[in-house]
Amino acid sequence: MDAIVARNLKKSFGPVTAVDDVSIAIPEGGIFGFLGPNGAGKTTTIRMITGVLIPDAGSVRVLGTDVQEEPLTAKMKMGVIPENGTVYSDLTAEQNILITAKFFGMDRAAREERAFEILEQLGLLERRNDIVRTFSKGMRQRVSIACAIVHSPPVLILDEPTTGLDVYSRRLVIDTVRHMNRKGSTVLLTTHNIEEANALCSMISIINRGKIVATGSPEKLKKTFDTSGYVEVSFDQPVGPSLFSAPGITRAELWGDKWRVYTDDPDKAVKHLAAVAARDHRMIVSIATSNPTLEEAFVQLTTEV
Ligand SMILES: Nc1ncnc2c1ncn2[C@@H]1O[C@H](COP(=O)(O)OP(=O)(O)OP(=O)(O)O)[C@@H](O)[C@H]1O
Ligand SMILES: [Mg+2]
Image (cartoon, rainbow, N blue to C red; front, side, top):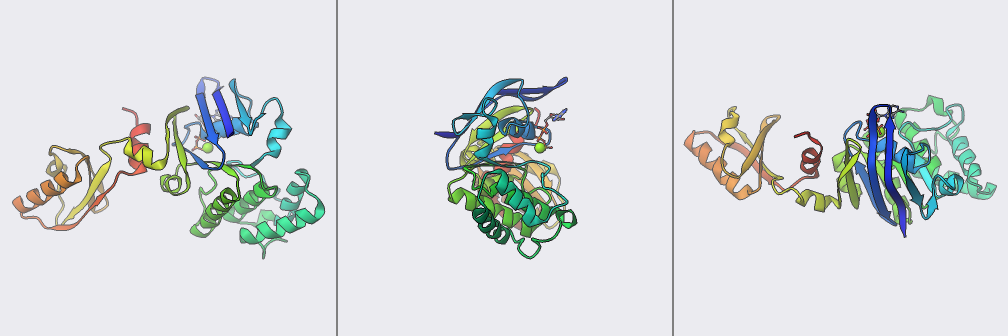
């Protein structure tokens, strides 16, 4: 069975069409990513999937339960981390987890055991008796995640779980997502961090202006674009873009002190660069080829032409 099935979701806010006929089927067991720029409609889609926002049209089923018809049953199957966390600021970290566990109907012993386990997992054990209001953003986000996973939900939905977090918090969040997935939860997350989507997701939908523009595994999406490999090169003196106009080179961009030369034939591009360097008596300081990146696929799909 698919864990999440959304059919023809639509949502407008006045003249703005935030989500325009989005359909997805997320199979059980994977980590599915929604990747898109600011304002693409990710949060609006997530809010409709989690039953917080009523769609103008379309329907959502979570593990077979229609989210609009049976909201409570559907919500019991989900753990949700919204874009702006929903923890109680006046309670301690542990109280937040215990109260959420109670809402999900766990008995006292199970609540306490699970609270301890996830406080430890999320690096919050030492601060468990502190009021959340006194927490940093990263710590508050970890409490939010702890609350979302307390009932070991079969479906975990996270809206930009790592935005604004430091390396340590980010790693804890990612480890927790992976851990939940290994234990059987299907994960849906949104991100604009392409590397994160690449590293974490088995399937990605790229969403832009309220529409899904591509869906596939990260590797498949990378390969969809035939001109997406590049050669990174730097010279001993500044050079202009004219050096890079040659057959097979799609475009060149200045990246710090290097040029990134996009090409569908890295071998040909490298030979061209070596030849022009020799001709103009320039020294190549560094040169490296790179395979197609997800970033390139993303840029091509979300940039207006
Ligand atoms: N409650 C609302 N009222 C009016 N407009 C809204 C509302 N919620 C979202 N929008 C609009 O819908 C569009 C999509 O917004 P949404 O928050 O879904 O984007 P997003 O992909 O989550 O962006 P971000 O990456 O910045 O979080 C935007 O144009 C936004 O201004
Ligand atoms: Mg958002």
